[in-house]
Length: 124
View 1 (cartoon, helix red, strand yellow):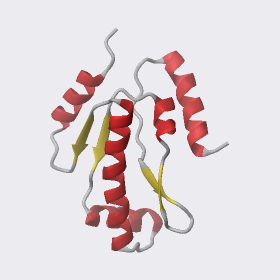
View 2 (cartoon, rainbow, N blue to C red):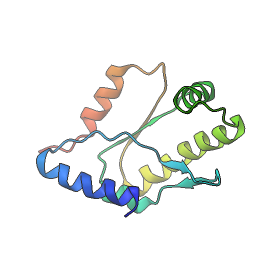
View 3 (cartoon, rainbow, N blue to C red):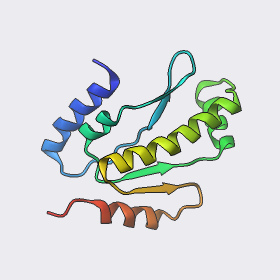
């Protein structure tokens, strides 16, 4: 079972217990050969998000986080490609699912993000 399949199963179980789930994840990943892999649209269809939030950190922030977390330096060109792929693929996912997307960065107001999420929740 892939990580995405495990996630879909866990979300299905969680939805029974709660109507609202906030999930933090990526639209793209790096594989073992450092190629950018876009997660399939069907993964997101199964997740059934009401809205998407794309967090767009700076290149420097990502490089620093990786160095702190993993203790290694990453190629800035590769990381920039991942960031660009995330932006592009988040738009594809948003359009394919017909759900709104908000792009945020370090200067985004938390209240604006919360208002977007609240407005995107299903009514009922």
